[in-house]
Length: 204
Image (cartoon, rainbow, N blue to C red; front, top):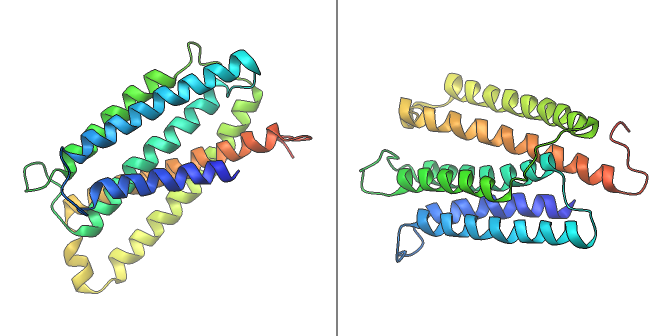
C-alpha cells in the first residue's frame, strides 16, 4: 500500500515543483514535465510487459488505468494548486508559462495513456466492485471539498474573497474535480492491493 501513496505524493510534489519558480529552467517546465511523464510511461509499460512474461502477475487493464490516472491527475493538480497558491494570473500570455505548461502536461498524460494502455480493456466482477468503491469515495470527496468552498465563499473575510475572481474560481473547481478523481483512483488501487493479498476478498 505504501507504493500507492508514495506515487500519489511524488506526483503531487512533482507537479508543484514544476510550477514553483525556484530557479530558471533551461526550457519551459511543462516540456520537462512532459518528458518525465512520457519516460515514466515507457518504463512502466516495459516493467509490466516483463512481469507478464516472467510471472504473469502484471496489473489488469482497469488497474493500469487507475495507476496512470492517479499519477497524471496528481501531477496536474499539484501543478495547478502551486500556481493558484502563488496568486499569479494563469491566463496564457500573462508573463508566466503556467497555463501553457498545464496544457502541455495534460497532453503528455493523454499520450502516456496510449503508451501504457493494453490492447484490450477488459472488465470483470472485481473491476466493477473496485469502480463502485472508487466512485463512492470520489463522490464523497468532491462533496466535502465543495462544502468547504461554499463555506469559504459565504464566510471568508473580504481580502480572501477579493482573490477569488471568476477565473480563479474556475481553476479551483477544476482542482477539486482532480482531487476527487485522485481519491477515486487511489481507493480503487487500495482495493486491488487488498484483493491481491493472501485471503484478500473484494467484498470483505
